[in-house]
Image (cartoon, rainbow, N blue to C red; front, top):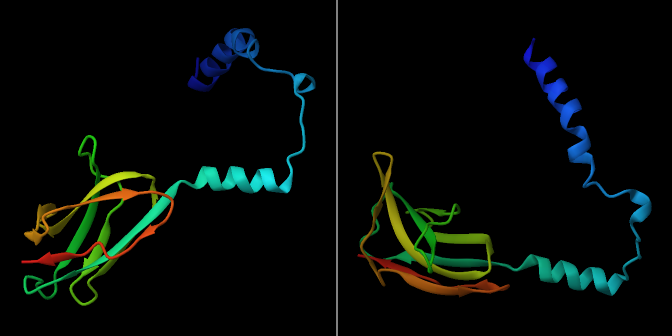
Length: 141
């Protein structure tokens, strides 16, 4: 038997078990939402923020890229988002972050790895709510 035939046979055999949990459309009751209810729900669903700042100082090397990386302050796991900062334009912006507390650190890329950069302060803890947080700056030493 080919793989596709086997999958079809499995689907036919298990269909009664899968279908018992499906609700019929006639059992559902739909009520229209008002415009104000939709606005409130969309605002509650956003719960994201942005963090921006810049790197400055005598330690910034020309022709080098830096990365500002947010980590979850609870378990120190790095976020999948990071901001790349060029020495020619040392500003950064992290947007669409889920609300929460973050620890920001600066890294540089070398041989495919991210290495920590000596900065002051070494790290910045930010409580990110549903607004923009500005001027989270680092002095590169």
